[in-house]
Length: 179
Image 1: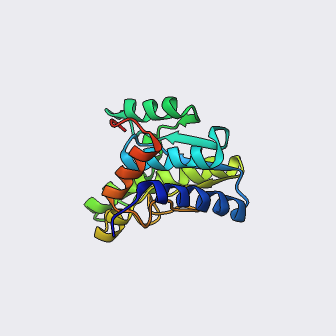
Image 2 (image 1 turned 60 degrees about the vertical axis):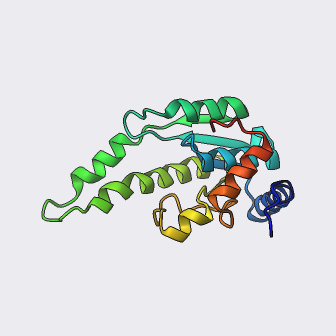
Image 3 (image 1 turned 120 degrees about the horizontal axis):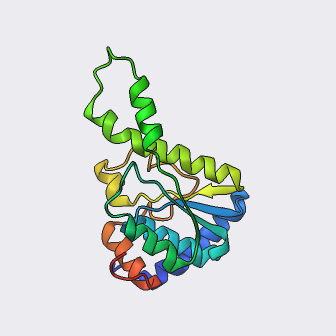
């Protein structure tokens, strides 16, 4: 059966409204990377809840060469946003790990994602918000997500959509191709 982005978009928006009402959230909080997944989730949240009920959080770890895409998204959507640099937190944890530990490559890669999620929950809890997970089915299927990092959230609009379907939803909702 062929994917119908327009039909799916209508269902997703209704589901998101119902989910936010059921969990008592006033505001959706989204980690904004500027990539397709966070762009589509943010646009869906704006469509479902209105731009006044969506907060984007940009979380570079030091300097982020492509942060302009994230800034372009929040400006395009007209949503409130915060830039919270997580470098000090990541370095702080790494510097406190016992020296006798053999710190794995996975630890180094996944620590920033877990700190980003803690940051999103700190923002969310401070504004009676709920965190929107931005993982899609393709990433979850191949294991390209971080447990208790980007795979966490209070609701997950893209969890049943492949990368191709996420892109189709983004096009249907009117996101610029660059996002």
